[in-house]
Amino acid sequence: MVKIGVFDSGFGGLTVLKEIIDKIPQASTEYYADNGRNPYGVRSRETIQRFSRQILDFLGTKGVDIAVIACNTATAASLPDVEPDYPFPIVGVVGAGAKGAVAATKNKRVGVIATEFTVRSGAYSRAIEELDPEIEVVGQPAMPFVKLVESGVTSGDEARAVVREVLAVLEDAGIDTLVLGCTHFPLLASLIGEVMGPGVTLVDPAEETAYETLSALTAMFPHEKLGRDAAVMSAEDSPAIHRYYTSGDPQVFARLGTAFLGKDIESVDGVT
Ligand code: DGL
Image (spheres, rainbow, N blue to C red):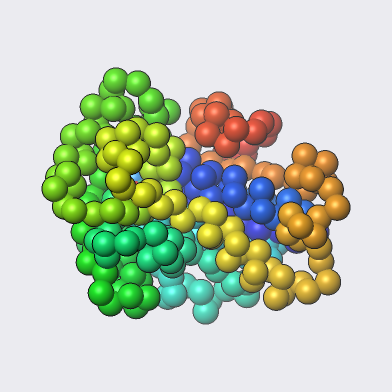
């Protein structure tokens, strides 16, 4: 059975894993959450690359056929530098987010909320500009959102107040599209949507990332039936196995991860 490795600094990558399980129900997955070392978004490129390599090495030992960096920060810091060092292809999330933004914007003014590192790296500005040089990108760091999600606070007054405060600067930016440029942020999408209002389309790179992963796997395994259309069985009946690893507390991961994924996480291995 085809095996997909997925990693993030914490819970955010589950937003991508969810789409992968939905779109590629016949693949098993290995998900690594670096909860013990996040946030990545305030770290240096060198450190983030080192963490990415450690986790890719780990996923390699699990025999993955492809790896998905379900973290914008690690994608911006590590791809394409690390890819040549691995025997499997590596998919990131920034290209998918840029594609979604270009498809959604009408007034060619796009906001990107992300970690400090991702905004500073200019990865989104470059990726969007490559697709459409007329689009203006307004980047806004939103690190407090990572903390909210990591502590399981994704609704209610406390989260609403933080979201309002961080997004206030985008009020007069004239954007019609906002990229959720950190995989933790879709878990706050309803509050972000409420604050930005109906005139702003939110772009979540997760679904497009799952499709990119599916098309890479289809090219590698042309005879395997991988996609939802091709699958005879539904995701629920699939014999696929989904394993989880965290550098944080396995019990906390199982509890919050189950809530975020909307699917039972039965066993989590603690790793260092
Ligand atoms: N989920 C990560 C991303 O997509 C970042 C969270 C962190 O700062 O650790 O960028």
